[in-house]
Length: 209
Image (cartoon, rainbow, N blue to C red; front, side, top):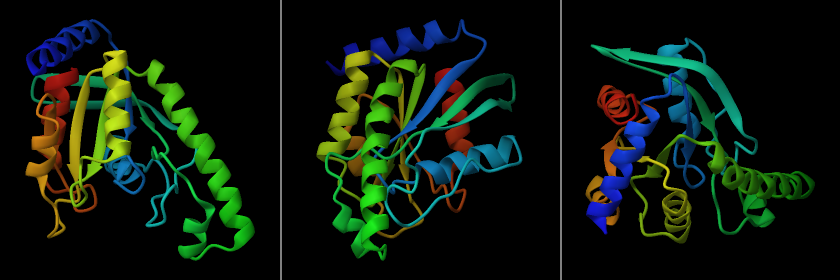
């Protein structure tokens, strides 16, 4: 099964290499660091940020897009639209936002928007040429949310890179992510600190360019 998945990934990578411009989506659970990584990519290559990141879950509740991102290193170049998606969750409870300090009305509003964001994220999968899954390396990778995301991508045969984020934290365990998803290319980074970001760009160019 793992060899077959690797074959599929290689096949679709070669297919997308024929495109001059692709659409790459950032997916993952809430607070994994998708927007922080999007901001890092956009600042490095466009000189501006994508959007607002927050310690409160579901800060990103609408699809955000940066067009014409161009990465060039050595003899490889990749041109793409970067799509930052709301965090995928199997359950959204407005009381969690109250615990985070929001008032009742704002908490209910955010929960409604976050629910719509999850639905939109799944719908947008069909438009993706490539997906970068951003996981919090301090959390258990065998979560229902992560398995749901992986399952949706496998069903659509979308090529994937998995990023283990927050390597700057002591609890980060990249090996757990590698053990959970051995069929995928995995790279560890800290989007906040910029740790290993060059290695991420090298992997992205190798896989998608």
